[in-house]
Every structure is written in structure tokens, then in C-alpha cells.
Length: 301
Image (cartoon, rainbow, N blue to C red; front, side, top):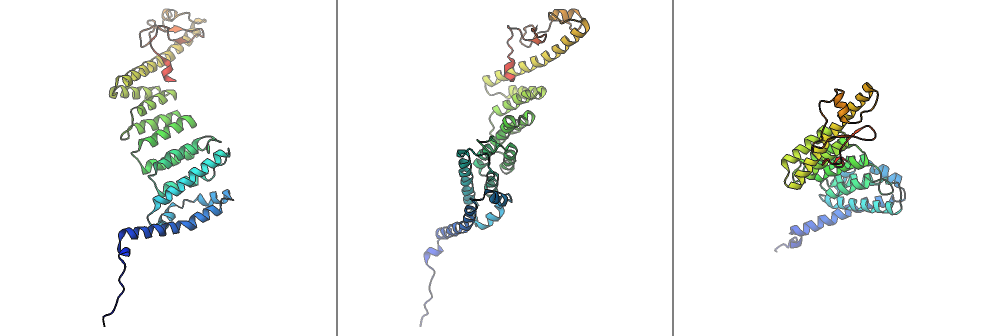
């Protein structure tokens, strides 16, 4: 008698069917995780405490290779949570950091979570969590995982500039980001402008000189020239103010014009700005630009 052996159906041998089975198992594995989170909605403090320990690596193993899917779920939850807190005009965003940490641990290349997550964290309440340093930590992890994505450096620069008023670090972020592949030319321009605002005039001058040498169009080249002229004038005005102070001490009265300073021996000739116009002494006894000057110091503001 010929024995009858049950053969496995063709569907079970199909790679596509196997994928669907794995996907179903993946969703089943997520059910207890999501239920556990949902049970804690009534106690945000307990969930924040539990989420403060990054569970990303544990969840990676539970998802059977579908960590990207779970990352999307957590990112959606982060956006929903942020939206609810904003609508409620709440100043408490305890879950935001942990949710973003889980999301980016599961998928280190989910750029949107870094960029928008940093905005959510840095914005002052009630518009956001008001934690710019936490936003910088998030972006730092993003840069480590995505070193060639220059816009993360852009976001770092803006947080240092707008939220922390740290112009030196902002300028450095724009400068480093401007060297990444595909970065737009204005990154270097931002670095130079912010360095000047932070008082680092020499750094700003070097950056604008580099921008001028590598400018791809006349508009950017002219902007570089305008900034270089303004930087030179700003330093000259600072030096002239020191000379005017010395004149006041030595002569016992303020100088009426720079010709007076020349006659005193403190200057060899009446000074002129980079455009060739003579410097003037303002009502406050400080050096300034003449109305005929083509230098615009406002580009440094």
C-alpha cells in the first residue's frame, strides 16, 4: 500500500506568504507593547519614568526586523502627544523626549523625527517643550547616524542662534554644515554673519573672504564684498573711538574733527572708510560714517 504523506501547501512555500506571516506576528508582538503604553495614559509621570530608559534595542528584537514600522508608530505617537499638549496650552511635555528617543533608536535614519522633533523640543511653552539643549542632544544623535545630511547642522545652528544666543557655536555649526555634501552656499554666509554678530570679526572676515573666492554668482560675490567692507569699517571705527578717548584725556576737551586729532599727533592723516569717504565725529563724540559713505554697517546686524 502506498502511504499517503500530506504535502505542505504551495502557499506556505511562497516567500510572499512567509513575509505576510512575519508581518502578522510583528503586529501581534506590538499589541502588548501598545496596550501597556495605553494603560499608562492616565499617569504621565509613571510612563515618563519608564520611558526614560531607552527601550529601543529591546523593541528591535521584539519586532523581528520591522523596527522601521515601530519607529513610525512611535513617531506618530510623538506628534499626536505634542499636538494634544499644544491644543491644551500645556507647559508640560514630559513624554516628548522619551518618545523621540525611542523613535530614533528604532530608526536612526528617520530624518523627520530629528528635525521636527528638535523644533518641538526647542520651542518655548506653550508652543513647545522649551528644552533647546535636549533638542541639541537629539540632533547630535541624528548627525552621528546621518553624518552627510547637512540640514541637521543647519538646525543646530538655528537653535544656538535663536534659543541659546550662543553666536560662536551657531557660527561653527553653520560653518561645519556648509562643508557637508550638497550644502547650499548660504550656510557659509550664515556662519560669517553670525560670527560677526557674536563679535568674532576676524573669523567673519575669513569666512566672507572664502565666500567671495568661491562665489558662484555676482549677487553672492557682491554680498561678500559688502560684508568685508563693513567689517573693516567696524574695526576702524573701534580704533578711532579709542583715539578720540585718548585725545580727550590729553587735550582736556573732545575733538571737533579728525583734523584736530591729526594736529595732536595721534593720527598721521584724516581717516577714510573702505569706500573712500572720510570718517566723521558724531554728536556723541564717537567716530561714524559720513552720509556719502557707501559702507553699510547694517549688514552686520
